[in-house]
Amino acid sequence: MGRVAADLYYLQDSTYLLVVDYYSRYIEVAKLTSTSKSSDIIMHLQSMFSRHGIPDVFRSDNGPQFISSEFKAFSKKYGFTHITSSPLYSQSNGEAKRAVQTVKGLIKKSKDPYLALMAYRATPLANGYSPSELLFGRRIKTTLPVAPSQLVPQIPDKNKLEAFEMSKRQYLKDNYDKSHRTKSLEEIPPGTQVFIKDMNTHGVVDRLLEEPRSYLVSSPRGNLRRNRKHIINCNLVVMMEILLILNQTSVNMMKVLMSKLSH
Image (cartoon, rainbow, N blue to C red):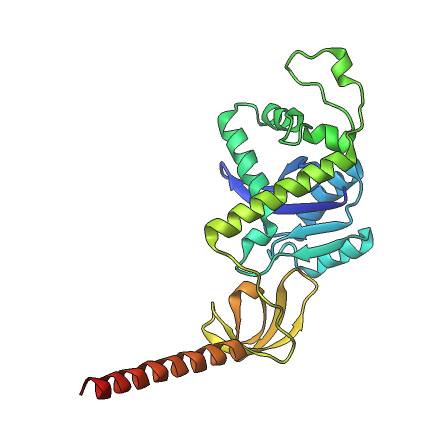
């Protein structure tokens, strides 16, 4: 498991920890006895890692269970990189969020959640392989009849798989960007004056953080971590205001000129 993402979700009066592997989309779920303790989450992750190995990268949100000193010590001991999503920008942990919706849908439709999860793990994805095939190199036996020959281990063609996944992600990104009219935002260098949209205040970029598109910004309310989406380069704002003023001045001058010509 190279990269995994985790999230907590609430369903039927219980809280669960979900972990999904980016490569295979294989999902692990564990019921929590305590939602406030890092130790409970760490215990379940240790169990998962013992089965699948330790990931290189572990992604999560900024929940207190994931940013505690105890979890930091756990990541250091087990040797994985922990990346948290930007505050107020949950879609940066989108893989886990999508997996949560998948699991919730499966469990709500099934009387046996374990069979539902098993069926998901055995069902081929858009790339033609099931999560279990991608993670274990073989299909898993379920309650559905299957020929023994289909359970023989078979390693997927990694090059074809990666090419398919890359093409699919690019297609989804292009559709999302087109429908939401998104555009790439330029990187803001340290020392730049910015406007923090969600706080309605100004600040100064201290540095670009290791997490994707995240910045540490000094503000009157203290140091804040924000996604690039939530901060505006004040230099660009000033330039836009100047252009608007110049444009309005040109319009006014044209009106005066037209008025003189009409007389």
